[in-house]
Length: 458
Image 1 (cartoon, rainbow, N blue to C red):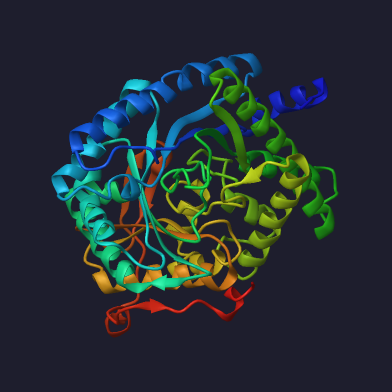
Image 2: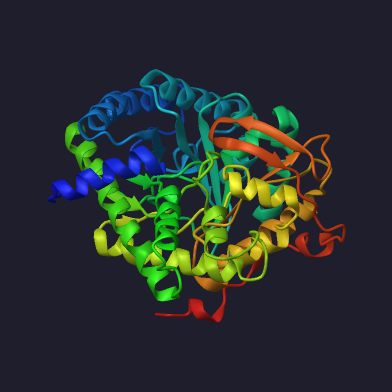
């Protein structure tokens, strides 16, 4: 893949002035050949396999950063869903022991997070899956870098409501045993989870993936925002088609940079590591000017959450996907735009001013790339209400054949309007009000919500 000097120089400008970075280089590692039965043998295998595959990841990423001057914010590892690897384990203590080994190897190789403490239960849960889900609170409370995800539904299978309720209980328990409920920032539930997602906390290495791959997640809200502001200064901001075309061009350039970095890192790591995909998702940060919310408001919506917000977001996501897919044949993951509340300074401001609410966020997720992300609610929110919020969001993904997710933090001893500063990329949590009306009778019905008629495609 060839890159012109003009492309490289323009990329440097975007880095220096417009917050462009590579949000993550994630090494996916298959563990399908792990031994079963003995937790000691499994832990030994995990450490040796992961250290062997990943010990040069940070070094190689740093060399690519130096070569091209493109910051790589996070280096991560994703794994085969550990519920499959740990199927033979019998106790919570054994699952926690496995999580501690994963945490240790992440620390030893220097990555920010290791993901894939995950389960796939969209059509039903095995006895081992249930044990695994129940172990998540203690496993995440005992670690710092381990991330967990559970796929609870799909367009082809419907939504496993039994496991939705289990995960709502799991989230509540985890919130109660970690400071400010912050452990829940490392736990996400999905419908239609992607097997090649490089982003935390939902990354895992799918069973259809090769031995080892490098997947890249790009950033770029600041680049898009700067381009729209240039259009206004030049008097060109009057036609929606022109706005969409500008966003497409920016997404094209961002994606090219992402693929360059991914291929370089994979090449340096060597066999059996190959380059996988570029995830096109625009990933915001708490930095001023690096916000999806700011883009929406720059497009003419007075405050994110006002009428027109969902339409503006839909146009942004579509343009990003069109520009990215023109730039690379290796697009995957989630690909679109993240709208986390705490990790986006503009979204935090919208939550504080009251222009955005949980229900409007849910509407926006129908057109964005993921779902209700880093949403904080009062700690006394009932388990059934959390299960209902999860079910509503997963239903959007199931019916629309897209990935949706929930990363929710029930913060103990909090009330609507409180602000909790988690620091770093996690930013500020604004506690949002939830409906006081109950859905307990619905979410405690057993079984699955059947898949939609659109699932019958063969």
